[in-house]
Image 1 (cartoon, rainbow, N blue to C red):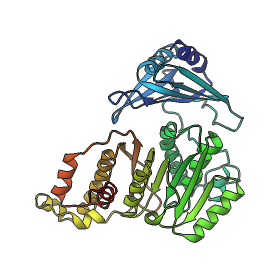
Image 2 (image 1 turned 120 degrees about the vertical axis):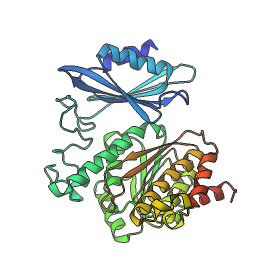
Image 3 (image 1 turned 45 degrees about the vertical axis):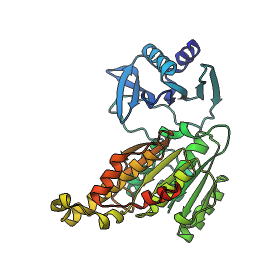
Length: 387
């Protein structure tokens, strides 16, 4: 693996923007690692964020220490590394037999954001889509002025879009290479995030992707298609339709479902499982189903308060969804998102296929204890023929 260390020595300088190590070698090891430059006590360091299970551990390393640390992780824990530099992108793949393949892609002047001059921990937030650099769809959707200034009333939307792109950045290595990756966005509405996802993955990173947005509002869908044509986003299209009835694709690599109301989220998740989607990102909206179903004598003293019952039912709903996705072979995290425009719900379910699904008897006991029978459970049972 000296080849990787030599490469790291060439890349870990002031041109590095950030990097990701992924494709874990074993189920018990770290899941992912990220590296970025920081200014620590007046000295340039490289901060390593190592994700182990649901915890993340941070180290501030010198360039030499970072070379050894990342080189060691590639030897024992990971099979892929992607480094984003100001002038190029470097991809490293290690086969099961230890063969190292390195691919480099030179970036145009506009391809990637420039490294921040201020690397301090308390520096101003550096967004993926930077303020001061006009992005066409953000201008047309009323988030930015033509000069790239974020409109004050839309700053929360700007932050939300960038936060969402951070979630995308964390899983981008899971998307297939060497063929077109298909991403389906259920319940896209005005499609701020759909356009942002396309712009980041296709325009900035140059990945071969196709994104399809689906929603019930015909006028909004028509407007989004017009914008996509105007920007020459030839692999971004929008369709009018219902999540439960959609049959336009036999396979999908990533499913995104944002603010799909109540059980519409369950139908989207079931379709993602049916398609064997590699990645699922879901921000549920209003959730009424379990609120009406919960029947638990032991919890009755607290569930008698309507507001408490509603909030607990929503949390139970998403926790059970996460457990069911784990049974279906996904590694699942429940993360905090910025409040959506249409709902105060701020939970994002992120699931990455790992094919390690197994029956969780405790989850079944939990549903029995609560007296609930969620739609996603019934849909997945029907898929398995176990209904």
